[in-house]
Image (cartoon, rainbow, N blue to C red; front, top):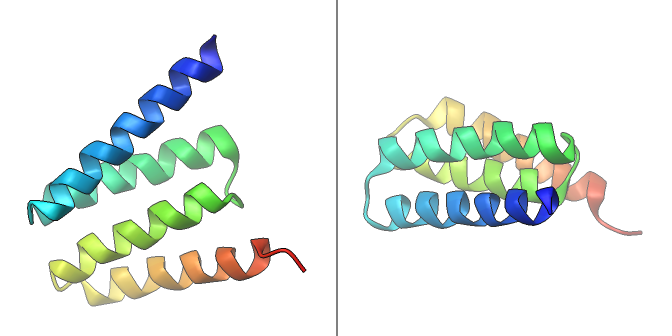
Length: 88
């Protein structure tokens, strides 16, 4: 039961963050994606595809605010995870 609740919560956090990004509320989206990255890392571990996706979206929110150094760091981490996690 706990996993189902955590899954529903995770989906609603993703949806909320995505809606903020689409509404061009980039600072709020950044905060939501940062919380999502932290929560997913705690729940799933740092080397999980969902963490990579959240880092990519966090980077998008940061780039939209011209936080290019932070965005690049998070995008690079996302890409590295994607590469490491890609099946051979």
